[in-house]
Image 1 (tube, rainbow, N blue to C red):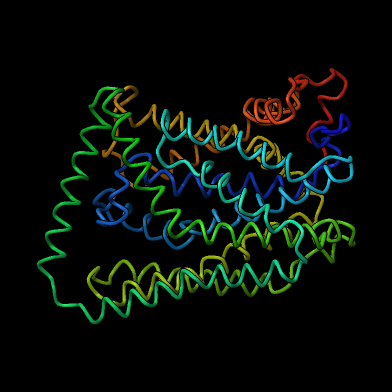
Image 2 (cartoon, rainbow, N blue to C red):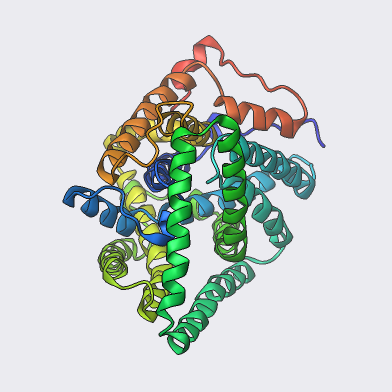
Amino acid sequence: MSHTIAPTPVRERIDLLDILRGFALLGILIVNMGVFSFPYIAQITRTPRGDSALDHTTELLIAALATGKFYPLFAFLFGLGMWMQMERIQAAGGSPGRFMARRLLVLMGFGLAHALLIWNGDILFVYALVGLAALLFRKVQPRTLLIWAGILLAIPMIFGAGFVALGALLSGDASGMAEGMAMLRDLEQRAIETYAHGSWGQIFVWRAIEWLVIMVSLLSGSAIQILALFLIGMYFGKRQIFQRLMQLPEHERRLPAGGVCLAVGLIANLALAWQMRVTDLSSPLAGLWQILTLIASPVLSYGYLALIVTLTRTESWRHRLQPLAAAGRMALSNYITQSIICTLIFYSYGLGLFGQVGAFVGLVISATIWLAQLGVSVIWLKRFRFGPMEWAWRSLTYGKLQTMALPASSGAAALRP
């Protein structure tokens, strides 16, 4: 590895991308709160988080505006970041493939520790695994990346349509579904008992089992979509779309069809969230709405992306959004910290509130944690170059301890684009 390879200096970062990461952290926390505070199985049984109208409305809005909307944005940014880093390694005379493989293997280790020791909903392990697959595409042409991304995005929809058709043919076995649902509800209650009142060892075992189940689910479905989003991010990187966007006059900085995607995405996702809420699980229509959501969710994600791009066209909004940029630069640290804080709130070795917090209170807790992280990130980056997890990730990747503290004179400039 060339000795000239080093972490990206602050002055070379694209501020917009850090703002997007900071924004995505809020949406991911809002969605993850449903698993931090309530059994993962409730995603299948549809057991509501709270009985009030406010809780029901909150769950509907989270399903429509957040669920499945922020992980595509984060995955896209991850793929884009991968490509930009490989470009820097190549320019420095290093081996991009070898460097990124090492970087992803370190991330995989972090993900495994996060999943088994803190929280079973970890996504880092999957990102690292899918990232290794994405490295196979690093030399292909931009157009080929888009073709592959389209094929990969279509696969879950095709399989989903097949399952919907099969479900329609086999519908009528209500007793079998009822027995399966009863078993799931029993497991749901056992999860509440374990996380709210169990020992650390009991929680560890239950968490490990749930993580394996989640991994099977992700690797058999969502991982394909994540790879597609990585490839789209790499396409944006190869085309230098954001670099060229930042070179345009401020009033011309916009993404094509962004407003249309935002409006259509909002309407479509609200309608689909409502339909999924009122449709019986045994109905083939439930599967149909899920397939349509696979289309509608990325449309809204793109709308959010375009909205942030539009806001950053003005100096006043760029200034307002700087705390998001700070949080985005510390995305890994903030993501892990969210897990630590939430498990201490909900698990037995903390406050033991698992299964007792409704959707609206969960949303308030999410917003409070995120706002606190914005402030802490701003303060931290006035003194340090990286977040603590970013420092560890870089040190292990580069094979030497990175300089953590900023020179005293540069602290004030640390957050400037």
